[in-house]
Length: 416
Image 1 (cartoon, one colour):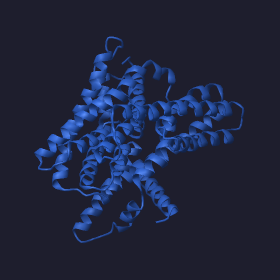
Image 2 (cartoon, helix red, strand yellow; image 1 turned 90 degrees about the horizontal axis):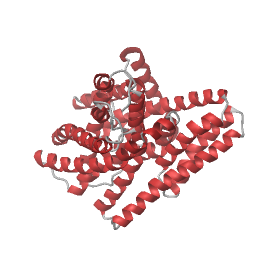
Image 3 (cartoon, helix red, strand yellow; image 1 turned 60 degrees about the horizontal axis):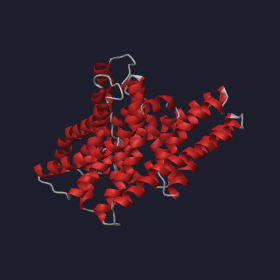
Image 4 (cartoon, helix red, strand yellow; image 1 turned 90 degrees about the vertical axis):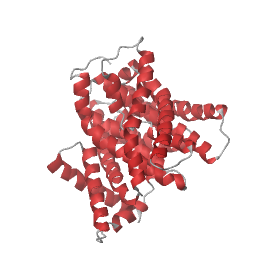
């Protein structure tokens, strides 16, 4: 299919499912459109098993889309920038140590624990996978997804300080998670020699280099915004920051994800306060909110339809279901250790670890990383298990997060 046909089909489905969700279901848009597309996909599969085959057009559509490239080079930069625009950098600074710990140490702890859990579970269900590939699964499933988290936190009613921690972590740990994934993948495939020095160099180049690059393009954007008082031109400048900045960062082998987050924080705080008129701020918020809603809807439609082209067996399903509580346990431990270490320096409210555990949603980034794996006997198993955990995370954790927050944290915006 050509690019226009693919885009037309996805936008049409996203609009139709958003309408159905708004009129008849009433769930948060991201969850609602994914649920509808997932139900439709399962219905098509059921009809196919009865000899009624109507899903070929959708399968052709999905097979013509590179999910990995669509997410990482198409949607993610826009969604991260839109999310970072509305995070108060002062609130983020107050929680910098816990956010930094969760985005680095927490991801590494979770990667090791999930890898071990997968190796044990696969042995129980009669499947085998080299441990290094189990560790690779741990690397791709450990980062929380900013796309899923930011969208759902808007309506979850979390205390402001707790929302800052969860959203701040999710914005930064995906970049770290991608670096860990790349390192483990190179170990698994033997693509290059990996040692402590090369890992440190890769992390410094990708993460630290990406942050510095993002600070630079954020400052440049601010300087340009300050010298213009025309909201059409200013919106175009922010659009160029996202697209041009991400493309240039990746071409320089820096983390485009981290660069765009840092640029978004700079523009959303310093640029918003000192470089824009009230009229421009109003149009900026409307423009990026619209971009955020459209791309979120399209992405979650894609995730719901993706089941049409995935391979599931009884063993894959059983392994995925058994791993759900173990992945949550790994998340609980990987959050609990940094919180315990920082408790003497920072006040945490009762239930903070449990809320952050349940609020650590997985989404499109994990699916995209799984689908980016090279062809091999391990790929189908990892993709299937990843998809099962992501669906549970979004539909179950996403739908109950508000109730968990109210029960464990209370409705007041208390310090965490």
